Image (cartoon, one colour):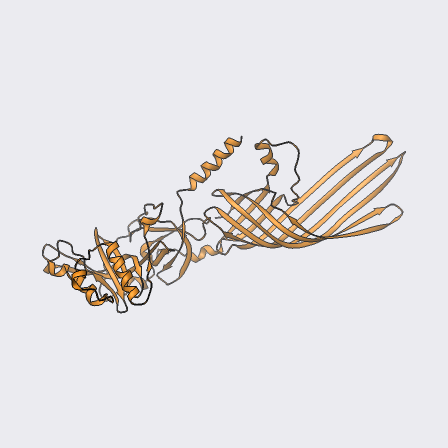
Length: 431
């Protein structure tokens, strides 16, 4: 049975291993910024960006063309901008320059920045300074030597804080590593350590981007507003998902684990009165409400030694409080909160000796409060296991009632640490 459980857990992890989402952000055409987790893919201007507001959130899609900027922190950054791109014909004097929207991959970001864009199977470098975004012409065969040298001339005249001689600049090739190092050095000369992005090639897993149906890339018509300032009618409303909630239902499975793993039949007390738990959390903030409940009824009777008695005991504990869940990794969630406890119980013992019967009643009532923390691990998309630890103060009054005798009361106050020995199996519900 242990082997089967290990195989099941391994299969669950493997089944989700292809869904890699990394921390990042996106900015739409309206300028609204959304912190999210992005799936790394070979994005194109006419493809989708797949992301989640949280790692365990449902999948959202947004056309790349409807974004202004998106990035995976420390790895990849892309911006969308309108630029002029040359379309050289057989003869360079007939080259046509068109303004169109392109997806720029940020290579170096600083006082002088470097970008790269793939446009119709041609690679173009762009650079930015205070004056704005300008193209760094590519020395492709269709361009004359004079034009090909223009990118060297541009580097020498606009991006040469170091004062490099012409003989060195002419040796620079139109390649990412070489130009990236050049712009890093230029920023250092300007007194700023530039930010670099290693790109998708630095990631372990990169998927294929899903193309957007019937989403052609069109040139920008002159005198029309830039696409950055327009809002597509197909634009999805990311903010609306903030209202969605996750619902968690947990149940203690220590007895089940003992059976599956074939441990000793001797029961081990978990000191956990909350066998059934429920929580509802906001998908975006993680803030929510949590409650737990436990009820037990026992009946015991004995007629040995000439004594005939019967005991019926009822106990319940109710927990209500605030809870905050936070992502702690690809499949881990940690939680913390503060709870209020309501404690109650009643025990009635009836003795029947030689035909005469008396009833002894014992009642318990009290309250408690304190902080609680826990951790959860995702077994499958909607299934979790977890445990928790708490530090509760409680005050309980015990009342005993005997026939023809005034009732007696005892108050017990204590602060107790409940260690994480109870294991819960949880099911997450929600859209």
